Length: 183
Image (tube, rainbow, N blue to C red; front, side, top):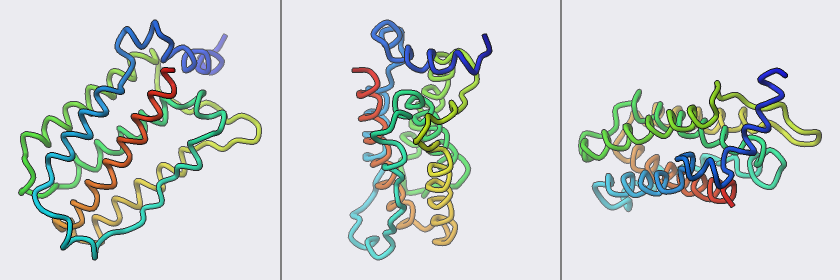
C-alpha cells in the first residue's frame, strides 16, 4: 500500500478523539494566535480604512465540500505556513510589540511541527474527489494577493494593520475548521 492511499485514512483519523487527545488539536493554539495578533495592534484602524482591501478569502473553495474532511488538516497547515511566511519574511511595523510578534512566530512554528508529527509524513494534498476542487490554488492566490498588497503599499503601518485584521479572520476560520474536524 502506497503512502498516497494511506493519506485519506491518516487525515480522517487525525482528529479522532484518540489523536486529538495526543495533541493534534490546534483549536486552543489558534485562539491564542488570534489573541496575540489582536494585542499587537498599536492604534485605531480609523485612519487606515482608506487602505482596506477585499482579499477575497476563498471560503467557498474550502467549505461544504468533501475536501473538508479529506484535506482539512492540510488546509490549516498551508494557512499557518503562509501566515508564518508573511510575518517572518516581511518586516512588520516596529511599533508592534516585538515580544508578541516573536511569540506568534514561535507558536506558528510549533503548530506547523505539531501538524507534521500528527500526519506522520509530508503534508500533501490528496487528490480531489469527483466534483470537488483542490483549494490549494485558491489559498495560494489569496496569500499571494496579501503579500502583493503589502508590497504595493510599501509595507506601511496601515497596510500591516489591515493585514493584521485580515489574518485574524483567517485564524477564526481555522479555529472553526479544526473544531468541525474534531467533532
